[in-house]
Amino acid sequence: METRELICIGCPLGCPLTVRLDGEQLEISGNTCKRGEDYARKEVQNPTRIVTSTVRVTGGDVEMVSVKTKEDIPKGKIFACMDEIHRASAKAPVQIGDVIIPNCAGTGIPVIATKEIRAV
Image (cartoon, rainbow, N blue to C red; front, side, top):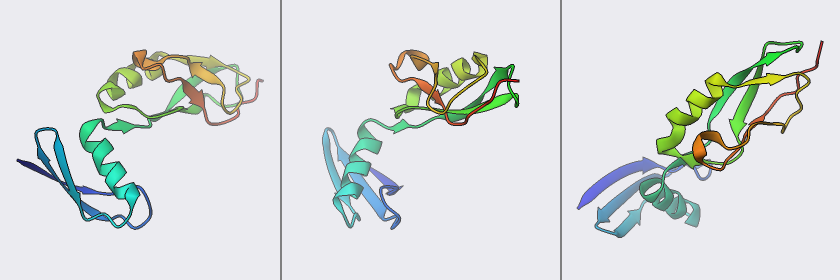
């Protein structure tokens, strides 16, 4: 039986969680709400993350635009996603929500702009 200790990020309480894994069976304790159980289950079975970074911009009033994955991506794809982001560039003007990379690292999740950049 494997035991993992987590801190829930599902709400501001930050409950300390204990997850005991026995094969496919999970025993979760320490949560004070359903979000804690959901978070622990997801974190142990299929961990995902939102990735944030910056991308170079040509012809803009600033040289970089902040970006993020539109949704969580599998944790194992973070480095591949960052490689694509570092190779990417955008042409000004850029609007919030513009798709910079349509399918990042084969996840099916786009990388979008989170800042407006004006053309000069």
